[in-house]
Image 1 (tube, helix red, strand yellow):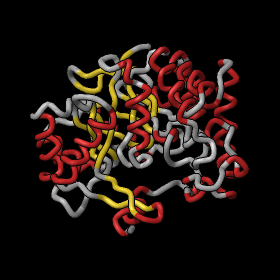
Image 2 (cartoon, rainbow, N blue to C red; image 1 turned 90 degrees about the vertical axis):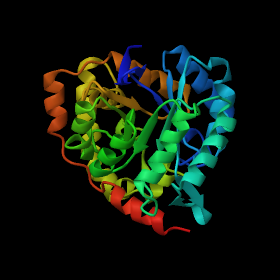
Image 3 (cartoon, rainbow, N blue to C red; image 1 turned 30 degrees about the vertical axis):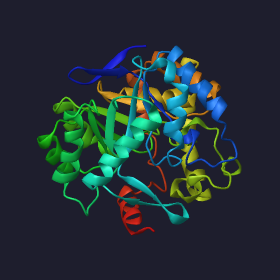
Length: 326
């Protein structure tokens, strides 16, 4: 698999693996740690060397899973984890980006992952109660101490990114990016390209919806998509036209809608690395094969002409909810 440069001296496979769904988010009914471990190990065999997790996934169980499953591949793979988003009672989330918490969180992640240094340590969300200089400065200290190799950040504003990049260089930013979530193409992506920073794109298949395999009947109890406005019945009916359009493009290439969705994300920039998540070997192999799909100019025009999605998630609303929870 081809590699992509995120920053000077730091490159990863052109497709990574998002690991949260193995332990978090999509409901407990289909969780299977043994199957997930097989997916993780087979991903390495297929050429993937970037695995994305966070301490809040589980919480903690996803890091433990990666630590066990990837123990034989230390030195061959890069594990990206996150801190700063914390679990609250009732399944809600809050934020704690105090230097004390981040240092403690780092020690916990090192222990659970079974590594001497975290390859890419990401601030999961900005904490409005803690000055950026303090939270990002604490992470920079961890780099100086050799406990972290590189730093990243998820869902910060452009001004916040500029502020922290001046304190210590960002290796990668992480945002949701897909055919139905294009919010960050106008500002964050151009800034990352201009500044030699990688862009990790999570949920490139629209939390599974853009594959065409997700319906109301497949979203079970405990699945976070039940609270996502894009998965309300009327929104899903509207958004079916997007899936239909992806299927038309896929038919030209003998591909699948999911592969077209991933290939489209890859085509948005040379520094963009999609990190689709899965806990099934079948979908892992399908996702990796998207690396061989090259979309034509006609394909890109047809995808650009698809209608905007209904019920798009507002990350500003997520920020407010997180800050007022628990």
